[in-house]
Image 1 (tube, one colour):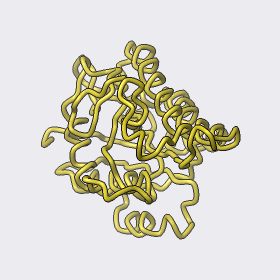
Image 2 (image 1 turned 30 degrees about the vertical axis):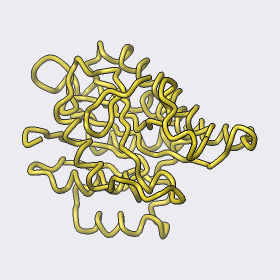
Image 3 (image 1 turned 135 degrees about the vertical axis):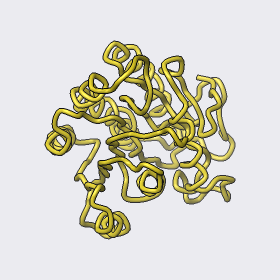
Length: 257
């Protein structure tokens, strides 16, 4: 962890929960990133107040208006981030933004499933496409061979609920559209790992643990945001070329597809 250093990172959904926790923990690193781009839908809204307060004290935080379900918003965000980074490129893209609705198989509807799939799966696809040139620049400008999160990486925030082999907490909540979107995100992560490896970019799907931010009505979860983020950053500091295209949890354990 001590040797983990990224010059630049972008976190989507950074105004609350896991996203905000990631921003806070990057700031606390022995060597914080030179640039922390915090993407959120409504930077001036009440739900982004804590992020705004943080940015006012830390000039390395750049808040980026970003709606991952909107291709035009993604394109504008990529342009803005590119202006700040220039030729150095973006080291780490964390696709954290996601939504969930507590639908069962019987109550699932087209509108909800489409909305969740667009945000949770298509959003990370479009983000990868839009930020690929900046990730390539970072990979090309980093010394040494192999893959790492310090060099260039895409981290897709997935969920154990997306595992087809192990139907995680099915009895508690079916959340069908969410499960389907995360299973598809896992496949996207695998595809990105194969397509982007030649450019020196590591890609991984990561389960952050069972958190209250995922489902406010859930039983008390065993994991706090702080514990989850600390674990995930430890994992990101240690993974390398052999781990690209894998599905890991916050402790680095492999989750079945």
